Amino acid sequence: MIRGIFFDLGWTLELPETGDWMLTKCFRKYYPEELQATVDPQLWRQALMVASKPLIEHHKITTLEEEADQFTGWYMDLLQTAGLPVTPEIAREIALDRTYEYDKYIVPPEVPVLLAELKKQGCRLGVISDTWPSIVPQMEQAGILSYFDCLTFSYQLGLFKPDPALYKDALAKMGLPAEETVFVDDLVKNLESAQTMGIHPVLSRLHRAAPDSRWPSIEAPLELLAVLKEMND
Image (tube, rainbow, N blue to C red; front, side, top):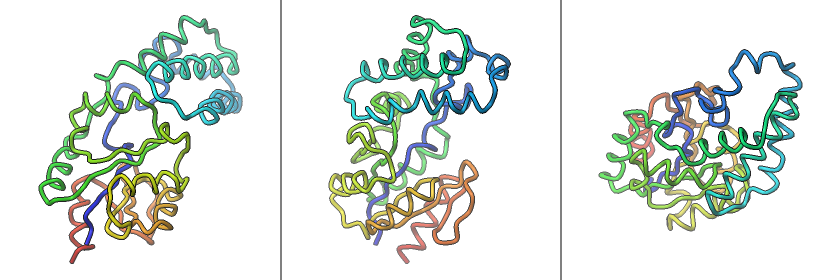
């Protein structure tokens, strides 16, 4: 019997302005797509790798202030490596907007319907997601934080999925045996790691992830109800 569901947050919050969590509307105010297009694509990829290295190496943080500082450095490193003009003031403005402005995020209409129905059915709900401290006020602003019984975020442990430590932490917080839980994510490597812990994987194809015959999949949030019913029958 499935009594607990863990979600990645990639499909519960969306950024409609640009569709990018990093290259936000504030970023595009200074660096429109046509300016980015002047940078060689290979150099842009290299710039992203250079900028992201400190985020990965120093990911265990606790405050919004630390997050804003990290992303100020991220934008500085990205733009300098890409050869685009940037000042500390511009990088800081973009980082502060990304960290503290939450009204830009929306929840697809089906998501709160799904979460409410799962709670009505007596399920415990949790999150396992790679993210930063600003995710908590984002969830609160979007009206979905109260649905969840437990939260496991990468920044709390300084590790990213598919590290087993995240799943162990999530199971401990939820207080259920792994075989009574499900994890919904859109990345195969994350589902494979969850499965090694005994958690049942469900592949989210809301953003058109490639199908995988090993697990059930959903293409819309409410489809999860039918998948769980089949698991429990």
